[in-house]
Length: 82
Image 1 (cartoon, rainbow, N blue to C red):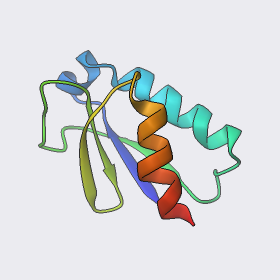
Image 2 (cartoon, one colour):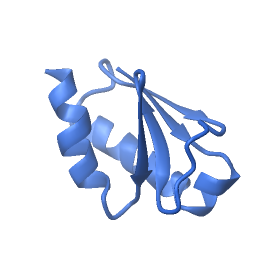
Image 3 (cartoon, rainbow, N blue to C red):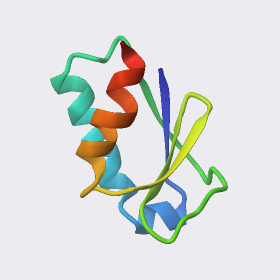
Image 4 (spheres, rainbow, N blue to C red):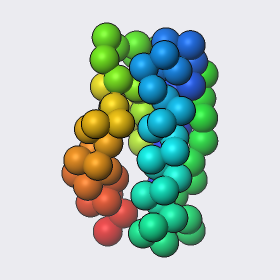
């Protein structure tokens, strides 16, 4: 699975650095480093008023925040791995 996190100026202001850190921690804690490739990306083109834009393979998901990250990871990432 390839995950790209927008680190463009808009998403940076909305917490993309924290979202990247949360992804790194979640991937390491669950021993998923061989299943997930994590990368930063400049503007994905789907800016939202709240949260960060994330591309999971070919799907674009908007509005990921540090507060919603755990739920997002559990419902959008983990089921796609198995």
